[in-house]
Length: 146
Length: 194
Image (cartoon, rainbow over all chains, first blue to last red; front, side, top):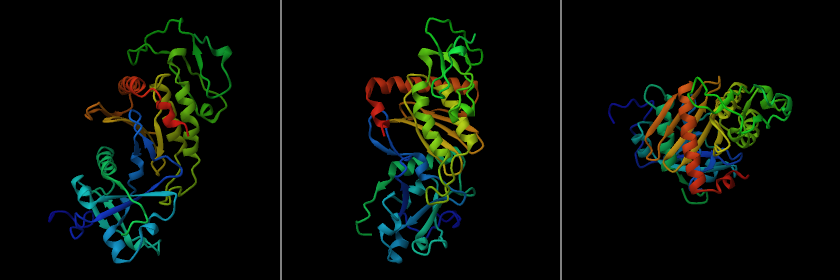
C-alpha cells in the first residue's frame, strides 16, 4: 500500500473498515430485478461516480463522531448499503476521507471512493468498480447498532 | 414504399407498420432484413406529437418496448435538480433522444424491457441483467452512446461505440437474451408492472 497516494486511497483507513452508500429508493430507478430469475438487484448508477469521486460515508468516522446509521440514511427515501474498504481496494479503487462542509450534521463522516490519477475513472473501469461494489453491497437496517 | 404513410397515427407510441406479407429488402448497412425503411424517429415523436417517419414490419415493431420506455425517459428528463440529494441533474434532451433512437433501432416486439436510470450528470443508462449475461446502453449528456454486453458466462462480448456493426451486434445479443428470458421466465413483464 506504500505506493498509493493518500489523496485517492488513504493507507490509514483499514481494509476492515466499511463504507456506506445511500441509494435512492423513490423514484425506483435503482431498484431493479434480474430479468431471468426475478431476483432484486441494484442498478449500476446507484453507485455512480461524481467528478470528485463516489460519495460514501465511512464507518470509522460515524463511530468516532457518534452518528447513527439513521442519520446517514437521512430518510426512508433511501436504502443504505455497506461495503468493506478492502473490497473497494480489490477493485483497484481507494477510499479517502472527504468531509462535506455543506452538511453540518453528517458531513464530517463523508468519504469518497476514487481511482488513482483520474478520481472518476473511464467508463470501462468505472463499470468494473460499480459492478464489484454492487455485488458486494449489503443492505443495512438503520436501527441496527453502529 | 411508404405503405403506412396514409394511415400513420398521430399517437407517438404507434409507429406505422407494414404487414408481414410485404417483402422486406436487406438493410445495406447491417446485412439483416429487418428494416423496410430505417426508422428515423424525431424528438417530436418522443414528445407525443408524431412518431417521425418510422415504417417497420409489423412483426418487428418495437411498439411495446417504446410504450414502456418513452414515459420513463420523459420522467428522467423532467427530474428536478438535485433529485438524488447529491446534486444530480436531469437527463438532457440530447441523451433522451439518443437513447430513444437506439432503442427503436435495436429492439423489436420480442425485446425484454430494460431498466432505465439517470447517471446524475445528464446521461441515461439502459440495463438488462440475466444472471451473468448483461447488456447495457450508456448515453452521456451530449448523446454519445456506448454499448456493453457479456455472454452467459459473464465474458465481455461487446464494448464499443455506436456504428452499424455494433448496432447489429447489439440487436442480435438483445434478441438472444430476450429469447432466453421469454423461454425461462415467460412472466418477465410482471417485473415491470409498477
